[in-house]
Amino acid sequence: MTIRERLSKLAKKLSWQATLGLVVLVAFLFVAIFSAQLTTHDPAEIVIGNRMKPPSWHERGVPEHFLGTDSLGRDILTRLVFGSRVSILVAMTATFVAGSLGVIIGLISGFYGGYIDDVLMRLADIQAAFPFILLAIAVLAVLGPGLINLILVLGIAGWVPYGRIVRGQVKSLREQEFVEAASALGAGHFRVIFRHILPNCWGPVIVLASFSAARTIIAEASLSFLGLGVPPAIPSWGAMLADGREYLSLAPWLATYPGFAIMIMVLSINLLGDWIRDILDPRLRNST
Amino acid sequence: MTNYILRRLPQLVLVLFGVTVVSFGLMFLSGDPAELWLGPAAEVMTADQIEEWRENMGFNRPWYVQYVEYAGNAVRGDFGTSFRHGRSAMSLIVERMPATVQLASLALLISVVVGIPLGIVAAVKRNTPIDGVTMLFALMGQSMPSFWIGIMLMLFFGVQLRWLPISGRGTIQHLILPSTTLAFFYLAQNARVMRSSMLEVLGLDYIRTARAKGLANRAVIYRHALKNALIPVITLIGLQIGAMLGGTVIIETVFAWPGVGRLVVTSIGAKDFPVVQAGVVVLASSFVIVNTIVDLTYALIDPRIRYS
Image (cartoon, each protein chain N blue to C red):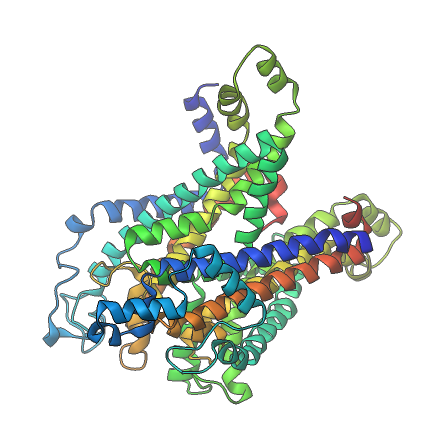
């Protein structure tokens, strides 16, 4: 089957939930890419005289600021639109870092076995001993906040599930005849691993990646909320929420909209993820 | 069983060793100890004085010597003195521990007592609006950042209705919002897993037999299906106990709950590293120990685990 046929076959199987998730995600991606074209304000433009305007449908609201302004008079809708960039960028890159690291470690661990496997899996145990968010907080506290650090920390903190699942797959695959046949025909380790074993591991990795992308978005927001995420100059949903928490009784809308944005994005990923899991790996249905 | 425990214990020790390595590494990465410990005082000291201070504090020794000393002290619960409070870092953490445990245990209780029945109802009423609404609720619960749920609950029950206090600790009322917030994600997770596990069990042959015998639906579900359907949920709950300890870090910050998590976060801001280290080691160790106890309990209940 060509890739095109496969894709069209997949598209026919899309549930309405997955379609909804996909459409919303594509919309978010569009908004993130064209943030500058879609907004009329500058996300960093501070107008103190305009601070904490409520959304435009309130009696004190102004039409130029549809969702109101924050404590420094910046337009909330504009910042929400630009904030989607950080969420998407961090989710994609950190998931990629975690996935690549985990897949490579899992391949090595599963293929070579023996003491290499022991060492790598004990490392996984040690890392899994730290609650994900606590590890991220501790490392960011030391390295200092910043976009690159955030991506690296979330990526490195997230490799363990990929490593474990790929290792398990490799262990069973390497006993199979087609792998033995490839080795017998003189294929080197590298070729066996990447040409014969890896292509058979993608299913669970993709399922895991979809859920960990959702988790990464929440983790990024949580860290930005604690002030350990991207620098304050870059609009991010988590940091907007932290700002909103300070003015909860004065300006409740500040904390409301960024949370909605996070929820809708994560919900869409989860809807799509549920469907991917059911298609690729129904056995995982009972794991979370 | 003894065999299983003997196999598990070295693993526990190894992981705890790893925890101390990581927390020591954090300190090492955090930069020049002279700058950190002396603070502004370092600026008025001469280079010789700073060098002498390093010598006295032992920072000139190789890292592995420093690590052995650190680990030795850590085992005895000594992480040094807090820069900020001038007291033993460990005693500060121990003082805050009951607040964190209280928060996490109530959250666990809520997530189990509410999540499991929701999952059962959704499975039994499969493909009805009840199922749809419950699962939408659960999916949303898994998609909202916990701190936002907390803020929204504060806004509604604290600021608008003025029913509950929005921060601090003291009365039972103070506990309601933070524990509900912490419970939310896990409650949703329990409901979803309970539902799918129940559906799986309800499709098995022995359930068909039970129905064929003419048993009432209630009896089939609660007496026959539930016990088996609970197995994956119990596994999940075991994992959640540990995860909640980590989750408290954020919730405690949102609600100004005086627990270990909040202390760690404020200490990070103040660069009070002995307290950060003590907090990280205590939280991670409790996580590991809780998980080991959970594993041992399974092995006790389910002999298949012992022999695999």
